[in-house]
Image 1 (cartoon, rainbow, N blue to C red):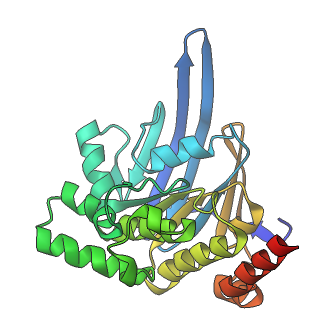
Image 2: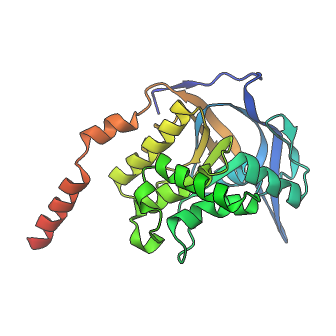
Length: 269
């Protein structure tokens, strides 16, 4: 990534995530795996950050800690100024529900429920009244361009549409941060850019903090900053100077109709 420049550090009033010498060690009997080795970093409100690295680099472990799905072995994790590193499972669950929205590579939608019901699920856990749950879910689906598909089941939706439902589900409780783990991993190239367009729009228009894990360099270039991990340590932490703009990239790609027509032509040959 030659077009990257080093990210300057320093605390500030806008700091939303701060890790202080965080380690994570997994005890596998006779072997100890050091997944994270003393990570210190900050993410500011409104940033769009890509976490990169090969398999086993520590990026997924970091995402689990950022998402309050796991706790560090040592060190401290401050989320919105609060040290969450020593919280109980119940306290972490409340933090996840109120402050964090999750998007996964495999969508994690319930097959036998509609898009609307899938999006409503986090509001059920939050104790939101039924009418308000439905209003929020419909609004979230509108935000990702799927308002007319609210009653469709996942099997009736394309991969890109399912990921849009997953993004709407992540937004329904108005989180401070969206954490996306390989959000384009199961999607074709155009659909991947469409998903990045949604994330860019949420970040820029609504100042939502977005953190994605990806092994794809081109996907990382839609973010504003890239943090690369290797062997449990930060190898590079850099601002993306020449970032990709998703709506511009989409304009240069074949339309969905053109792609379908090309596939039909190839099938006949």
